[in-house]
Length: 187
Image 1 (cartoon, rainbow, N blue to C red):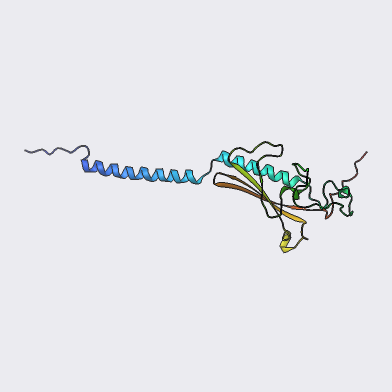
Image 2: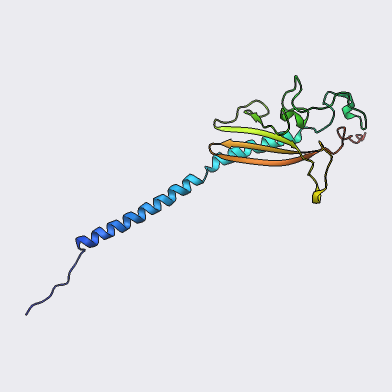
């Protein structure tokens, strides 16, 4: 009588097919990981760029926005005509933080590059910041128009590597000629 034994193990063909299938799967998984790593930015670098952009935007937005130059005595007098009108670009001898929002750029629509924070500390290597200010007469609800030079659109862009962080904000002049008159202090 002849007894048939059960076969155990894998044949060479089955083993080669298994290796090919696993190899293709591993290559596919590695490609997905590579693509996701390439398209995602390092969160710490993005966070640093955001901190630079936010601080620069805050600095620009906190500057006064007046029609008179900061050195003009008429600046604080409501309704008085400016002896020295505020122009675009920093005046001679001005230093950061500037005395007017207009001082942060040399011309409306032209980006100005900044490499330091307000106290003079350099930005980390690999980061570049620009500020662009544009007069925006379309600012207002439902297409209402505001007179020219009463609303500014401020754009801060921080580039790092091939990525950018962009912040935009608006600044409106709440008194056409001067700084707001502060209420008298109670004594």
